[in-house]
Each structure stands twice: as structure tokens, then as C-alpha cells.
Length: 220
Length: 255
Ligand SMILES: Nc1ncnc2c1ncn2[C@@H]1O[C@H](COP(=O)(O)OP(=O)(O)OP(=O)(O)O)[C@@H](O)[C@H]1O
Ligand SMILES: [Mg+2]
Image 1 (cartoon, rainbow over the protein chains, first blue to last red):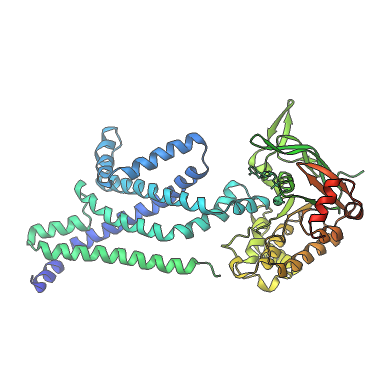
Image 2 (cartoon, helix red, strand yellow):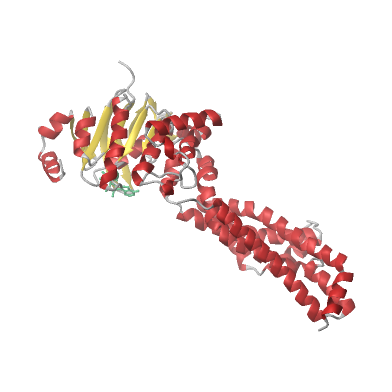
């Protein structure tokens, strides 16, 4: 492995690689930012919805978690277009990852809500809070603190899963790297480079998660 | 005669098939302090919880200031009120719980402010000033920025009481507010309750502290298997119990 040669190849391909990197970040960020509130909604319904709503959302969540993300992405890209919903590859991929994220966040939110003592809801009700007042002021802030570490893991899973969008032609970091490889044949070096970048992204996410965790942790 | 603060008529409550309240009648006027005593499982907590609809009830009427709690009559049928209506009614009464139930993610003062801001729509700065005043009243002003996890049980309970009375309820409900506390912390909480009572607050309290019930209440109610076994002024109930059951109960409690 000639390091200088590899660095040189990376440097001369810096713009397409940076483009891919930007796409990876964008795909992941949008999926997480949309998927998380959606997941909170899923968790809310799984915990407090009426029987019918709960059943539907249970199916939604189980189905999404039981399907490989890969299949989900292909389905969103190919099947949605058959039924007349035209999404670009980028949109379809983000859509798939958003669904994936929401089902996982939904499960962990439901789990967290279950562990909050009933007395919390009762105390909130006793000062006149409505259901939504109780949820947003009392339950959710406690649940979010609890799920933070697991949520960070989910976020890193999404970053990794974003590479799967390459199969429907979205030029994210992995596909950008492969395109450079097809010109330079430096596969070992460039895959190593891409792997390193993914590691650094997730490392940063975990560090940021720890930081937020410390910030919001309750004194005792 | 003025409308009673609390009027319970023929209250029935079941858990599944088990009837735990079997026809309760109780009237409280403004300024009354009523203590509920009775053995474990007699229905004291359940009665209290029906008053602010933390439990639904099947039959009878609970009325606070003349307004039926939780239900309305419509064409001869009983309908549960809308969530928003019930929330408003719950804020008419304040409740202090055995296990305090403070919100762990909020400082003491924010615990007290929450109901003021969300339910009463009080502006933040006003709510802050009011909450500070109530914390002062229960001797917790210097602890206003502490989180529940940083407070002793007795301090938490005092904050919880401030949270309830800050809503300016017409009736305060206390459910064994000292029974989860270490013995040395009991008196600071009882002192707060006593102070509120002497200030004319209407309150209904469940307690196992017989001496306290004796000192603070104008009426003591002895609950027995989901019914009111006996009620009257403390002197009478504690010193001249009519029933065998009450006499036996008193003998077994520390009083
Ligand atoms: N959520 C519930 N589901 C089923 N049964 C219940 C429930 N809550 C209370 N009960 C039953 O109702 C009866 C009355 O309970 P309650 O808690 O009102 O008694 P209590 O007088 O407050 O007793 P204690 O002095 O132990 O607090 C008991 O038999 C209890 O087991
Ligand atoms: Mg009880």
C-alpha cells in the first residue's frame, strides 16, 4: 500500500468524495430528524392509543423492524413508483430510513414510558394537566432522558444503513468512494478511508450524545 | 345555607367485581378538617381518589362546590365528562400523595409552577413569584432550585404540598403524607399541614397518626369495609367509640 499515492488519489477526488460525505450526512440527519418525532408518536400510540390504533401501529412497527433495511429501501424505491408515488432515489431512501428510525424510536419510547411510575401521571392530573399536557411536560422529558443512550445507537445504525442507498444509485460516501476506486483501482486504501470516515461520524455522534447526556442528567 | 365544599352522596366504587366503597355519604363545609381513619383496605385512599377522579366511580355523586365531579346527567343517563372538563375539575382540589410524586426532572420551584402555567395560564414571572411564596410558606424557599433527588423525604413532601396549594384549591386531599417518611421527618410535614388547617383550609386527610388526627380535625371518620362505620368530633371518636370495631382499631393503633 502506497500511502502517498492513496492520499494523492483522495485529494484529487476530494470534491466528489466531499459530495458523497455531504449526502451521507444529509440522508442520516434528515432521517433521524424526521424519524424521531414520528417515533415518539409511535411510542405514544403504542402506550396510550385505543385498541384499533394500537393494533395498526403495532403492525407498522413490527413489520418495519422485522424487514431488512435493504429490502425496505428497495421497496420504497420500486414499489411506491408502481402505485404512482414518484420519489427520487434520494427521497425514497430517506423515506425508508425515516420509517426504520421511527419504528425503533417508537419501541424504545414505549419501553421508557412503561417504566415511569403511575404517580407521575396522577400528580400531573391532580394539578389539572390534560393528557397532552401531562405527556409533553412530565412524561416525555423523563422518557427522552432514559432513551438517549439507545437513541444514539439508533442514530449510528442509521448512518451505517445510509450506505445501502448506494444500491438505488444515491451517491453517498460509499458509492462516491466506489466511483473513485473504479478509476484508480486503489480499493484497499479507499475502502479503508471510507470506513475511517464512517467511524469518525459515528464517533462524533456518540461523543455528542455523551455530552448531551451529561448536560441533561439530573442532579442528585 | 351555603353550598358545601364537598358533598358525597351514596358513593359506590368497584374494582372489577369487588366493591370497595359501598355507599359513602360525607359533607364538608368550608374550613372543615376531616380525617379518615380505618384499617388497611377499608377504602380510605380510594375514597380520596374518587374526589378528584383519579378513580372513576360507578354510582352516587361526588360534588365539589355543588358541581358533580367527572360526570353529568343527560336524558337520565350518566355520561363521563370530556377530558378537558375533568382536568379543570381536578384543579379545584389539591392532592398530596403518600410518595410525594414530585417531577424528578424539575427543580422544586418548577414543580410548583407547572400547574400555574399549564392549567391556570399564569404568566411565567407571576407564577415564579407565587411559587416562591408558597415554598416559603412550607419552609422550602431556600431549596427552590434543588431537584427532588437532592431533597429529603420530608422536604419533598413539603414541596409537593406547596405544589398542590399553589393551585388555590377549594379542598386539599392528603393521603397518608407522612407514612413513607423516616420517623424524624414526620413532624416537619405535620407542622405544615397543621399550619394550613389553622389557616382555614378545607381538608380531607387520610392518616395513621391518631394524635395528629385528634389535634387537627373537627370531624373524624372511621372507615370500615367500604362504609363509614362511625363519625363525629375527635373527642367522641377517640374517647367514646360506640362500636367494638372502632374500639379495637384504636387499641391496635399507637394512640
Ligand atoms: N387499583 C386497584 N385495583 C384493584 N383493587 C384495588 C385497587 N386499589 C385498591 N384496591 C382494593 O380496594 C380496597 C381498598 O383499598 P384502599 O387503598 O382504598 O384502602 P386504604 O384504606 O387506603 O388502605 P391503606 O390503609 O392500606 O392505605 C383494598 O381491598 C384494595 O386491595
Ligand atoms: Mg391508603
